[in-house]
Length: 332
Ligand code: NDP
Image 1 (spheres, rainbow, N blue to C red):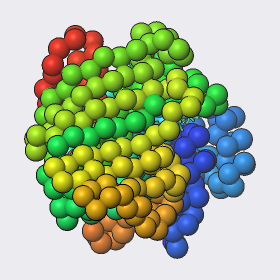
Image 2: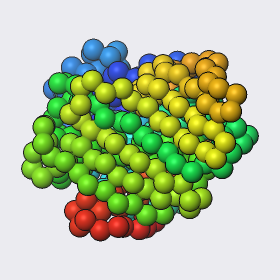
Image 3: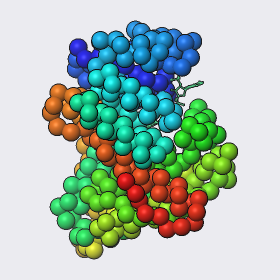
Image 4: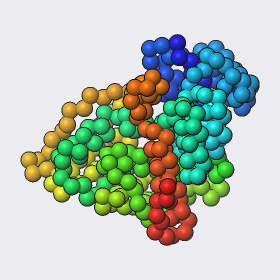
């Protein structure tokens, strides 16, 4: 069997990733690491995980652990990825990979040098809705794409109202949390790269310590597309969605910027409106399956380390644009 170590006793691991790893034949979670021995033990008991190593080194020294899933707060990802790579473990890391683009490059390079797979857990690429939209855009169903609109304003659930709202040093704020997903999804759908951004942020409802809980940005892509992005932690009743508008048609994804296998996609063109058939699938199970295949040498992960570097670069540009009020290039 292939053993996994969880680095971080996190909500996302408990709610989605444990199940996704356990859904893979021959894969098991053998250890979980927490910065608090007591919380680690409690988490392991609740989630039926056998061992709670007392340090990162102890987790990485376990020969049963062949892959790690890193879902600590964002400032910790870098050192943990570097340590995992040095120990020869494959790495599935949460977004944002790091707080700076230079750090993310260093993580990617360390995994390459160690010959281990590194992937970014951008789950939205695994959604059947987004895969359908990508396929149709590539087939020319809407002609040349001109504009995109992303609706990703949500309400941060009470049990997650912690470091995201009050710890700048942990990489809190809606831009590092949600804008990275939008950037990755747009890159995935359009097959194009972000070039420059303008943006304004808001800190009105929940966020403290200078962090933002809402943002509106416009991103220009290298194929000419202008993408409008609206992300928030503070909006209770907006539905999420993504729209791609092309010269000969528009694709409208409703309720698709989500962790769940739901939502619908409509194509509007000269023939009218067509609701597309979607075979929904668990996003995290599909993402972990691609990562497991990549560990066997069978194809790339759903979102690579480089994809994580690029989504972070866009988020960093949006942060800079908000801070300075300036049109900001996306710098890799
Ligand atoms: P959590 O706040 O649940 O967990 C982050 C860390 O906080 C844990 O590693 C844990 O530290 C600590 N922690 C957890 N619960 C408590 C508690 N009750 N008291 C004190 N400390 C606690 O964060 P999320 O699971 O929401 O996010 C973790 C990472 O995953 C982030 O990088 C985030 O961006 C990413 N994420 C990605 C998603 C995706 O779909 N791709 C979705 C959600 C999050 P320790 O491990 O030391 O015990």
